[in-house]
Amino acid sequence: MSTLRPALLTDHYELTMVGAALRDGTADRRCVFEVFSRRLPTGRRYGVVAGTGRLIEMIRGFRFDPAEIDFLRRTGVVDERAAQWLADYRFTGDIDGYAEGELFFPGSPILTVSGTFAECVVLETLVLSVLNHDCAVAAAAARMVTAARGRALIEMGSRRAHEEAAVAAARAAYLAGFRFTSNLAAGQRYGIPTAGTAAHAFTLLHDDERAAFASQVATLGKDTTLLVDTYDIAQGIRNAIAVAGPELRAVRIDSGDLAVIAQQSRELLDSLGATETKIIVSGDLDEYAIAALAAEPVDMYGAGTAVVTGSGAPTAGLVYKLVEVEGRPVVKRSEHKATIGGRKVAVRRHKPTGTATEEVIVPQGVPDRQPNDRLLQHSYVVSGEPETLPALEESRDHLRQCLISIPWEGLKLSAGDPAVPVTVVPAS
Image 1 (cartoon, helix red, strand yellow):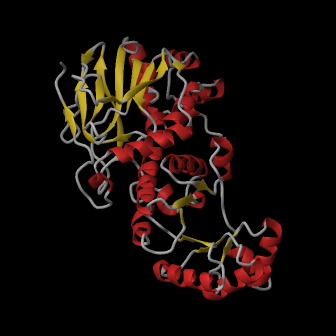
Image 2 (tube, one colour):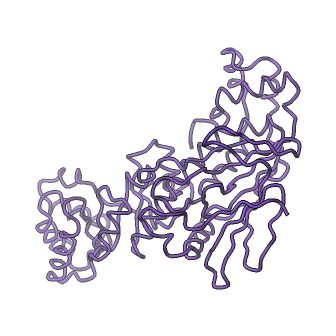
Image 3 (cartoon, helix red, strand yellow):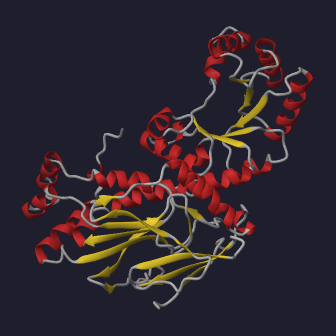
């Protein structure tokens, strides 16, 4: 587990606000904060909610220990009054939000945090750090899953991310529909199926390629994957089948013109009698590269850098804004950053066939519900006590159903309008 405690993710300015609010008497005012995005990353037609399960667990353990408080006091971040408040801190408010695996669009109130000003504002950095990362990875991964058209994907980007971000990214990718991860910590922590192959180093270690393959097969059996592009791909495939026989599970190719090489490799495998041996390709694949291979004889894709970095959009662009104080809506009027005041309620509107047509958001009220509306917000924390969270497999299935529900245009990789339009209507 991470050595960084959740409380240390608090930003300096958050504690400055807490100290000032404690001093002027506004710290205990009842407030509502909302998490939303003003716009989707360029080229995206939907966002994916991910990380909420991780976040709620972190809030459950959000405490300031004596050493942390001493550091904050010594460095002048907090005064004695604020230090005492931190020592007693427990989140006692409510958290509601969209389910993990739900789609979101510009303005969607994906998380609502209610409580006193002080207890809510100290969570801002933690909330945004978790959700901006996980939502970005999940959205990229979901696009890759769509591009793969039912073929399996393995997440293998741990070496391209911070060690803790790598575990979170593996979880988000699995939520989005990836079938495996190479990250063993994610396998242990979240029960995600793990898979992987030997690297080029293992082949280079041995006197020749056949010796490396023989060692791997002797250890793991024929139900393994041999990396065949260390030297010459065609000869690598011949060596692999010579050593393992036509029952070899798979070969992996990590370089070259994958479209051409996949075709040639399939033909060669078939000619050697290895008609059931699968072809796995990897090597800086993103959703566009995966889509370009749709017609080729590829059985599985390995995605690394692109998925763990959000495939060009490493943050979901989420913000955490105060929208209500003591039941009174408050708004920010800054140019290009204006907010809509009041706590929001959101529903997804559908045709009788199940196709989503609109997201309706009502500030300080409830929507005029129609027969095929689906309420989007659920309780995560009530009076400081976490509710039972859906299992990761349930969230994974929920996203699959959400993607089925949006119009097919919304699944395109090309730039376009959000898959589902959002309408903000006055309270009824």
